[in-house]
Length: 334
Image (tube, rainbow, N blue to C red; front, side):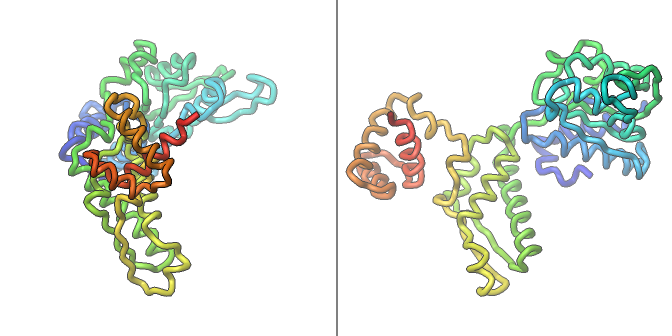
């Protein structure tokens, strides 16, 4: 079940080893913490732990997997009512309603952005310590047997009360950001997202699409800065293919086989956090370059012609970099 993870023998080797041990410990499955920046695959890992638990009979085949993002609620009180349930009469309009804890009984409860529970951490601690849950406003304890996975983009050691952190952090699993993944892994991720794209095209339009990225395009993709990590990486790849591909109404008459090449000009640079381009003011030497670009643009030069002029002056910028840089500089003008 972990075989689908790209980097399982490299960047994610330790991650998957810990995930397996937390589920397959001979002393019984353990609660755990998954930390990582947004878009690094925390929920995907939690689901894989669930399927692994089922595959080795730690969980029954019908065991539930309940995943909730605690940060989606407007305040911690609403999150607590959803997670722990409510008792009739607890507040005006309250009804008897089982929470996600009860729905996850016999399976796994994954609490994403668990740090937002704030004052309800003691209820989570009681659940983990005693295996019982009491609904908000209730007087009856209900027994539950489940595995809790607390995921977060923040350091839960700083966010949780010490007792709760101690109970959960026996297995603290940290997902690496995309910038720490190897170049080989980035290439495999690129291949994977291209494959997913072509499969969707085949399923929707019965078109066999072949996509290749030029070497320059791949270099830009691999060197990009991705604040939202793999999720953003996927979006950039999809947008690049979109830009290179014709509209579907112009393809359907061509036949079932179609090939495209994604070039550097198709990469949506505004979706990539390129520090050198977005923040040129940080480099003093770039100030003169910026002035030259703006001066040439004021003369009516386009990005390709500006790039040619810059290369003659010793600035080795490709035209697509000039186009993006020019966009940023014009937007910053008073």
